[in-house]
Image 1 (cartoon, rainbow, N blue to C red):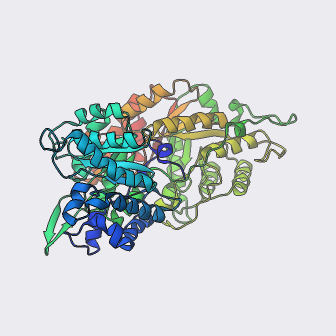
Image 2: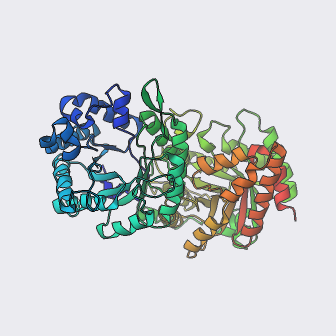
Image 3: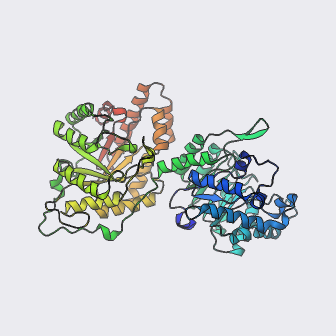
Length: 610
């Protein structure tokens, strides 16, 4: 298992939800010392941790939030600080096993410190040190300082950790009000500034407010720091129902906002008071939708391909009509048509014919988009090419085939006349209509690109000669709005080294994101085709903004779509927005790939009509 430092900032990490409130849900009385349960009822604490692990949490927090001498004293436990924390760490570690990280939870002392109270800074530091020592001895993976409203107190907690282990990883989290200030009234800017000297591994916010206020504060926090950011909101504000405090915010709502947290810049998401395993399970699904969990990298050495002497490798100008236009630097237009869910491609062929007559260069056909079960993309591509005469661009995904099946299908595609490909990793089955289906992913898009390049050089994946080579024009995908753009561009460089010959982006709605990405890849000399998606409704805009990784729809466009009142108004406004995007990007890229949502190709004619 990777350590916390190996993962933080490089992937999205899902924390667990509320521990105390979940124990309350399980029937533990509100006046109970929850931390004491580590000693008197470890089974129920284990059960809480286990429920969160089963829900998909990458990290579980110890049941030690209030396990300091001041909060334990009213229960007569002030002499058992080390024991309570040590036992809390051991319980969590046993449940976590080798697959889940354990964060040692440390909260405020619960008493005023100087200058407002009698407790000095050094006394506060010593109290924290006593608690943290138990957590370190219990072998937690890192410390999370959470729900601090006073930065001065948080600094004493960090001082305590530094005295015990100067290099131990930790997260600094504060709690805020609806106005985005700490409960002490301090600003997020001052919080970030005062954390600078301590070099936390991540900073963030938790508790007090619900998701909406957290999102507003995150937008500000993101502009203040380059550190990884954690966001763990409450499940809204509690309501008293039948004498019990109940948090009313649904798992779906929390998950929806978790997507927005990630898209805004958070790399750690989870829940606080009122959230339970159902909320974390929903967050886990949301994270999977934004970031497929399984990524398989290949080494640079794997990417070098030399053709046998007798093989004549196809030149780019010989591969296809589209590749010819690309090397001549003529603007290329692709239109995306999705395969039918049944056995008849009649409607798709008719649309392809209209697009061909209009002057579209090629029809782009996704391979099981959103992990959906549809007619084979290869079958539709061959049918359209034979019946219409327009070139298809076939998506080829790694999800459903092992490397044997990939080579077989690619050789067959070449024999059937397919000349243009886009190599993609593919959406995970969890996104589709058969979420329990098995994914293959023998390789990812990098390995697939390399495999195609080998076939183009007359070799199979093992380097054995196959006779005459294929001559595919190899495209790869790029997500300009990726959560981790550095990782996306690193992978793009590998795709290019593996053999990519052109690039197609995810749908672009915010041209500022595209511009930022293009500035980062000035060194790339391959033609880039920009994805354009005509929105059809406000609901469609919400879906793209929250369900499609990196397809960030800016607030001004969301507002334009929100103002539409009928389907036709929504479609007309979506086409207008797409035309504006097209007018902007056509000066920046080598071509466009325009989608036809709901199969409505008439909008494409309006976008391209001069």
